[in-house]
Image (cartoon, rainbow, N blue to C red; front, side):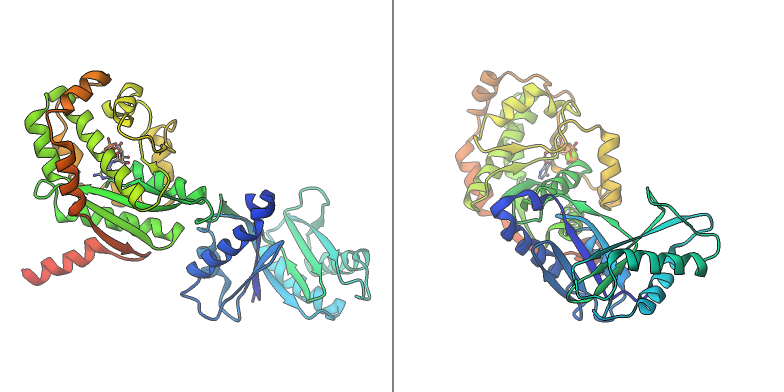
Length: 407
Ligand code: ATP
Ligand code: MG
């Protein structure tokens, strides 16, 4: 079927009153962004619907791209006929559309809506005229009014007559950019990319903060985190990736703090640095991939002792999810295979064999006085590097090229 456009139905944003205009504007912009590889395509964001006019571009790759945009409830590929198309023209297009989908034994119905009252047939006339034609043209097909397998919608509008029979669920959520800005603590693990995806789903634009500890962590570990950001850029557009050198902090903490409190104090330093970057970038919160009870640093007591360093909201979208549920989403968003690549993380290397699962807040504060918090912070912040990362960027493989040249 040669579709002329994709009709996009808005999600939750429809209910947002006066913000509606801004939501539609942002969604339009985000859709134009993901459709950049298709320069012929034109996006028209209107009050009630958004139209992606294909201009002879095949529908499928465009629909694949739309599937990843938050703020879309459903979408349908549509054939547009001229506004004065005859019943015979409508019948032909309807037949072709239904035939493409039809499997033996299935049922159908025709649902016509008519905004153009000048069209010579009323909705009943069209329903009946097209319905009886289909019954004759496709042997074995049956009409069913409630829950048919195929619901062919005919929209008779002033601008044209639109036919569609497929409705595809969108990614739901809110358009990225309408929920403000936050930072995300992105490791190379399974959880934080999923948390980043869920943050974006609520419309938040996220800047990624990644701590790395050369020479204890490799260039590949850093490249892997960047590649994860590139995967996530599919959902939220270009991402600022902020790499923070963390070696000195970890060495100092390890040298001075009793082993049981190493992990807690390292994490406090991470969060303090993340909070400083968050405020510096005029962001309003920090997202993490923590899930309650998953590891020693993710008990309520640990979270309290770590969270103590900032009054910014620390948001944890995975807080109640099981690992299996997290892995399921990681697979869906295509971050899982990258996440399980075995490059060591800065936390695993410096994790003591038995970190306290219930650190005491007062003791934590006391032990932390053994390190030069301000000096270490300044040094780490001075070493930050920011990279703009786009969908399709590939840091691990481009590094392989470099290695191959060296050999
Ligand atoms: P993940 O799979 O996201 O690494 P995890 O279950 O392995 O999570 P931890 O490694 O303890 O748990 O990390 C908890 C959270 O702390 C991560 O989800 C992430 O938000 C943050 N974090 C951990 N390591 C780093 C890092 N190197 N850079 C940035 N953030 C990190
Ligand atoms: Mg981890």
